[in-house]
Amino acid sequence: MFLNISTYRFCELSNLETLREQLLEQCLQKELKGTILLAPEGINMFLAGTEGHIRDFFAWLNQFPELTDIITKDSWSDYQPFKKMLVKVKDEIIRMNHPTIQAHKKRAPSVSAKKLKEWLSQGCDDDGKPIVLLDTRNAFEVEYGTFTNAMHFNIEKFSDFPQALSQEMTQLKDKTVVSFCTGGIRCEKANLFMQEVGLDNTVQLDGGILKYFEEVGHDFYEGGCFVFDDRIALDPELAEHPLENAPRRNH
Image (cartoon, rainbow, N blue to C red; front, side):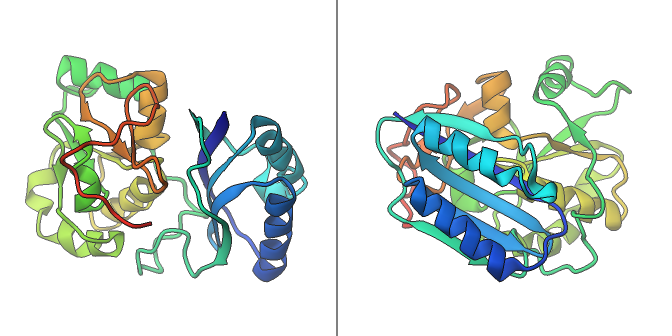
């Protein structure tokens, strides 16, 4: 069995090329495959390998103060779902093209999976405000599954989100907006951007859809969750669950 992890952390990183080389060397030594993105704003990782090798890698990673004790979203597969190991240096670990959004300096407010289920069950947040679930993923990902009655902007890439939001602001006023994505990275930046443009009552789903699956399961969710590896999509039990009618993408 292969342990598959996804995780990210917004934090200030420097000496990125040296760090890239160290990460790649460790991953190759431990026969891991997947993708790691590095940027001045942090790290984004999708990795798969044997459980022992994955655990050893994260134990090694703890030597870097900015990267200690990173929490991962875990799932299992009976094959290696990545074809190679890539470590890349980027300007952003998730591209938005808005320099004022600095998630490594300001943490977006969040709601836990269990609290979100509670809100959805009662039809409002703890203050009685109506809830809007906002899917910040790309349109083709939404086709694999999303929360019941969730709103999305039909975007092709995340950098389109700010412009799309500007056209839908009136629908989000005076509501509690819960942004969500696969693992949390996109909805965290989206949340900060929404606050910057005047939507004050916004939170991100902590850990994204994958953490929701892990802690809650399928409640209020329809379909699977697209993942960027050969498994295509995961079901609420975090098992491989490609959808026959959804588009297949090369990645």
